Image (cartoon, rainbow, N blue to C red; front, side, top):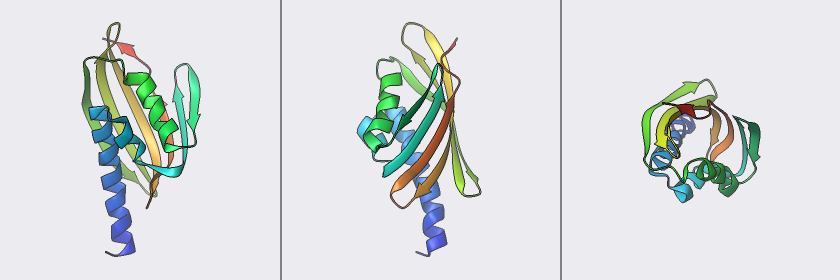
Length: 127
């Protein structure tokens, strides 16, 4: 497979794997989407979150959504933006009440997975 073709494949397959892991709340599968030396930054109400390992990055998602029941990925989109990939998704979940959450993640994806993820979140929006 040519280098350009391999990069294009990774730019689609890793984001889809990420979305599938989110939808299934499979935290180990999610961690496997990140490169070993990932730079993860997330602006979520009320604070900036960061991580420098796959387990720590996946840990933020686990912290946010593990207790939700039910939990449903209701929309998603993967868009190539030159040398970055935007992964957008909307989730509907119930913890103490029904809420909708939307996140947009801008990623640099390499051979080892997501090397950089800069994420912004709406926070929980009550239904």
